[in-house]
Length: 318
Ligand code: G3I
Image 1: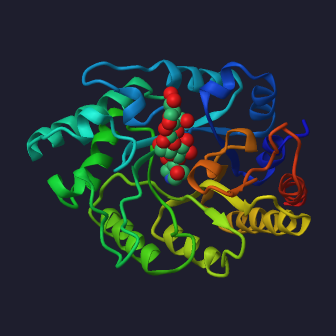
Image 2: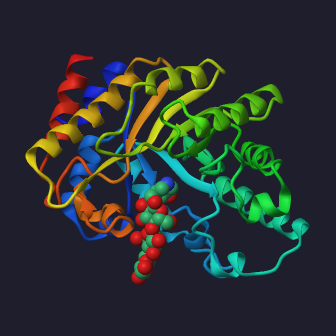
Image 3: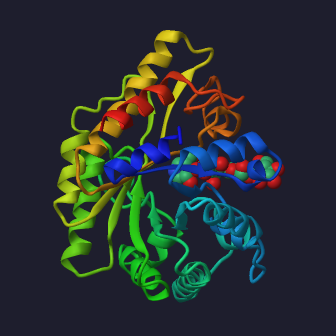
């Protein structure tokens, strides 16, 4: 084959993409590229609490089932995203008033239900997403932190492990690619969890980048987490450009994509490199950053961009 996935096998690293079943359903170009290029598929939204349980006790598994079924039909592994987050909570939960004990029970039951349903079918879970605050290296305030305190992280990992003992369990965060105050905080959390024997197997580095991102400490940063006995993974890579983007900006984007892959290839325990959407047609970036976009490997018509071609060249040589 000509895709990234077949080339990546040689280096023992999975190349993945986040995907959306709405795009899958009506769109042959989307399905073709997703199955041709990627070893692994991440559920961009389908396993988030707001989609799984929009009303209390009313579960909708249809879109998660569709995505996981697609991955299985194409021999791809699945990264499950995400079980515990401050965002994408259903209204009944975000706006409800629950005692700490009720919240603890809700969280435990949620994790058991979701992980249990897909037991043996989801290789890795982003169990806890974005737990670290942006400033000062503290844990972020959230319904979980406020009600349950910092122990919610270990509890969530233990509950996920109960539901699927074979799944690889991750904590995942953004703006932790470089060595900085936030990644130091994440490192201390990971080290503490390891020391306490909590079932944590990996750390995800989202890697939502913009031009000018400083990657000089990325390799050393990945390595210090790996040295804790953990897998590390690039989980949500993209590089947003100001619109309309120039050829020079596309070249710089290609450099950032390949330098992150290079850093991952250089760390033995870096097990996967996942892009957050593969086509500009469905990227989250223009919604979150008006005036920005063009962040993915393929354009809106599934044509490869310089970043894709440069990644593929690097995988051939590795
Ligand atoms: O499906 C509904 C649709 O029915 C409705 O009409 C429409 C109107 O807003 O919303 C649609 O849902 C949107 C959903 O994406 C599916 O497209 C939500 O509003 C929107 O908030 C949601 O955004 C997602 C966001 O997480 C929040 O869950 C993005 O697609 C997704 O890319 C983004 O992903 C996050 C990771 O989980 C964590 N790291 C950062 C990353 C980017 O923000």
